[in-house]
Image (cartoon, rainbow, N blue to C red):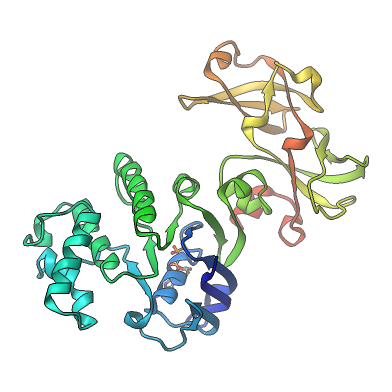
Length: 375
Ligand code: ADP
């Protein structure tokens, strides 16, 4: 599979003080559904605007379909961006809005008519040609904006935060539609979001960003199951993080000293030698067993059941261990119902389900909240 987008050491400053992209490098495979996820202000929009050609960068390189994009204007790139603000021209009809890009490209009337019709069908807006955007709902205007960006048959479609501004039911519908449209058009989609559910659901490949840098790139299950940094682990899914220091290695497992006792973690592929290193011991709540089966598994602790949050399919139960560390477990509702607040229970998990996360530059000092939020 070819690389449709290649970004090398891209740097973007706003003025002299804001470094929005700090030497960002990544590739996007042709046909991929590539999702960029990160908190507000991490540089997602900046990156999209640079790819679209509406914003310049300070240094680095950007290639689209093998061509260097330095100085190439937006309409000469094989890329199209649906804007966050649903920028539809209010004084033009739906037809003219969608035809706009094709007219810019100098296409003839018949071709334009045919393509606009096709684009409206794709976004399920057939019959709306003569309406004014002012007569449309927000969702319909967004579809027009979408039709406008796909009508020029780009190789890459950029979607900057297209989902999170609408209500939850519509978000689910939009996600489904983007997935269907991606398959139908068989082009590369690049979508940004700050919502993990959107990223996990839509992405073939995910890129986790944090203030101008890339934390991790991978398939959703890789990032969820094997996050490489504390930030990626926290941003994609819920996770327990317990600070500690690796004291020894048994040949199979690392032993990690933490304030709630020694915890074991099975060695993963290609892990460097961590003995003597400070780490965050990470375990997802769904791997934590309460009472059941705990006899046979490697990590066992006593915890007081202090709080719970009902989520329908599961109940998030919080256990206070040694009065100092809280451990969250996802418990099936039929099991959670038997647990009594303030009682003590045995909780446990397998070594192979835990991950050791190391990032010395930021984990020093090891206040996890500080590590995540940089306070
Ligand atoms: P995101 O899309 O992830 O929310 P942005 O790319 O919009 O992030 O912003 C990245 C950083 O650049 C933020 O610190 C933001 O405040 C800053 N920034 C964005 N646009 C401008 C601008 N036009 N002028 C100055 N700073 C900007």
